Image (cartoon, rainbow over all chains, first blue to last red; front, side, top):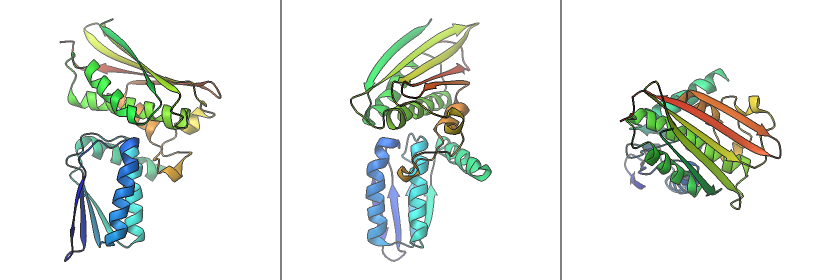
Length: 99
Length: 147
């Protein structure tokens, strides 16, 4: 995982490059929340281009970061998710909508 | 039977990725598509995660058993997998399989594990008894004939 923070745009960009499952989520959650708390960015961008695999643990992980960003009045953006990740996220959005 | 294997792992979350590698390796001699492989890896990952996190409540001294088979019927290849834990069991299977239901919201669980298994696999069977454990059996018909 790498990250950049653009001071002028107040934008935090986190590039993930590993499989996202219940194991990796534990560490990623702590680190990313730390960055968000440290910088209080206006925009937080999570780049998933290099994520080869994600299961439902990743849904909770992403939703948790979205909630934290929202609480801090920060815009949360997810970019470059592959087809499989999009499919899982859409499945969750649909299920949540009909729950 | 084209092939079969049996793996026993310690109930450690670090071992979930190991099982995904085993799944990919086990299916490497078929003409499986990348989409099919991704579906199976995701479904198995969900079942093993449930066994460790819910079945054993992260007790690393326990074991999760994974059995896989490949069978050919009428030139079609079928993948079969069974994930077994001898943990706490599921009290209400209908509730547990309800999309977005989770009994551990504080851990940011999305409650989508069974929904993903049921969507990505052709057949999912859950057998569970409180105090005895849970067995999840899943089958998927692969689109291509064997290589």
